[in-house]
Image (cartoon, rainbow, N blue to C red):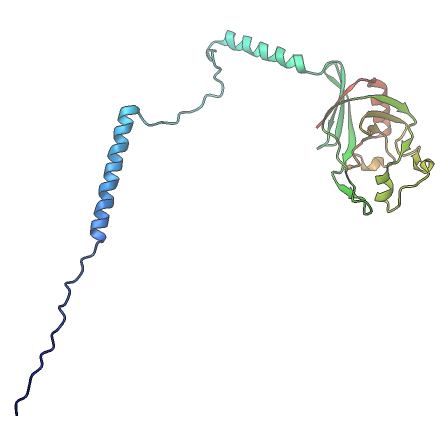
Length: 233
């Protein structure tokens, strides 16, 4: 009996694949070398790389820093320029951060007073959605008018804040006590005036006006005429 032998062809074994990482790394190294060489060539062509140097804050363009006479002249010019914009005569400065008011006359502070300024809070009318922000205004204003024994016509927010509806009868709005004995109006409803709550001076508790104690208010009132500039910051 003949036995037929069947030979099954075997697949050829593929040779092991070589890793490509050495080639990639070599290309990266060559690329970096070329970039470095190119950068060096550009710098050599255009100039040296930028090197930071100390900044001389006292150096003035066009003025020799060692020339004392020139520097003194320049300082004098600066002082004269500042004097041109410096307030003259009598003016008031209100520091809302420290709650301090200063009355200045011809460059001399003649009165420093503790005051109260705006809270910065927001009040909203629940009926209409109208809002009031109780900030003291910043910037420059002037005393537009002065009144002794002022009467305050309460605006709507004064009632809403206390939980009441604004009255329909305007006579119910008048208050002849809250503003003290003197008032200096600086526009847009803002006033420098007195207060019933002198123990709270020095705090930011007002609706935007500037409050002073009795003695300070009287002094400022009599020394700051209409037209006096008021600087608030």
